[in-house]
Length: 345
Image (cartoon, rainbow, N blue to C red):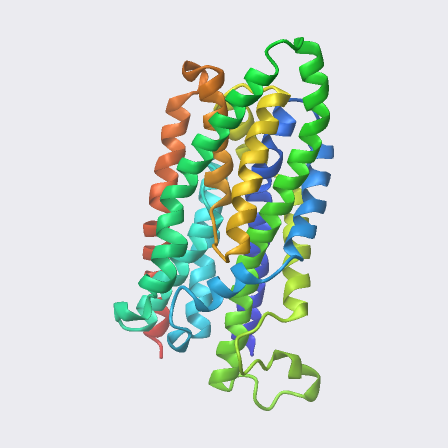
């Protein structure tokens, strides 16, 4: 029971960090274009992250039972996975790099599960989970973000070619409020559910192992003989992500909103709308997408249409390296932690 409480505490810590680490996903452009003040933008993102987090559980189910074989997962497995993801998130946040919290969690879970299974690679669900819902989207979603962001920006430029800069700024200053809210909502539908899946997996593991046997009747809500996402798990994760978002994530906001490309409201609208469409579609299919990858490449695509040389490609290179390294590094960290934990079995 104590280990389960530690897992829940680590999951809440991860969700909170995820909130402020990925706050930039929803509000970097609306802050950089000065449509909203940082305080206003964070309030907007926190509220709509919350509404999104309460919508559905498809992504949570994918994380909880679609990545690795639940039968090999123990409480130490889950704890080590979360610890690995938290460490990587804090490192990339400190460096101001918009890396993927989703991939950090998935990499951590796979590495820890592999260690718990004594290097039995068959416990990783490559064909049904990892390949179609992680690896392929990791490649295709940034490409889609770049292309769709660029195409939408090009179409907007064609449509607005006879408009005055003042009218464009005024119209899209208002429209960007809508696109930023939609981006925050779609982020909640995907990112908050990942921790829901982890806690649900911990509940299933605890029930299967008998860890909750003998507890007073008031704790019956912990017993889940079948994998399911309980209402209290949804509320806990949704609220925690909203609280984390409210704390802000200024280092990453500066990278996305200022360092990579200079944006105006019309560019922010194009980038946010593109990212929101892609993330919302992925959430409906239970794909744990990297919202960070999508919004980052959408901004790149929009910026490239504006002026290709205006994109600071050296900053982009640092971001891409963080993306490439996230899965293997978190996998290795969690593998080492899990091997150390199971050495005491």
